[in-house]
Image (cartoon, rainbow, N blue to C red; front, side, top):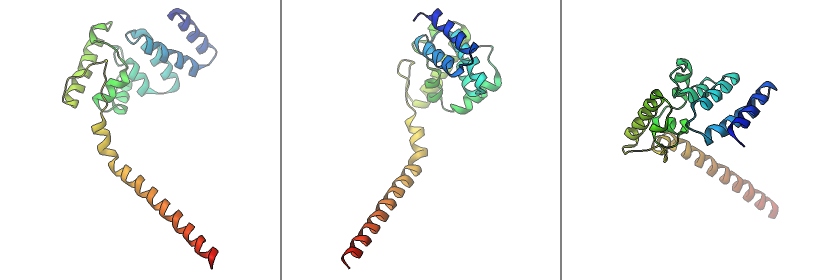
Length: 168
């Protein structure tokens, strides 16, 4: 479906109060046209209707007229450079950005991500920040495993107790 037709449907959805449908359509458009800052602005406006400042800040991050509170909320939700890089959903080099401000923002995020990862990164292969995530979840993984072990042992104890009672 052409961009213009989809945007007309977004407008109709918003007029009819179908905000989730409009949001989904806009998310699809941003995925298809990641360099179109107007689509990102429209998606941010829909997230404002939801009262989601972090998501509004996410989609307005490349816009010079962004709201500082939304930007702060975005940066608080996506704390690391790799998380921000993935969240921005950009594809291709920064030179494809429509404004100088957007190019500067994209370059700054990519540079911060490269520094965090210890190697150069680009927008086409956004890295995972597994190192940061794995260090915080090792205790949680251990506790989950221990809980499963306790549950299995309790089940076996009940089963053995029932088996012994059956033959007594």
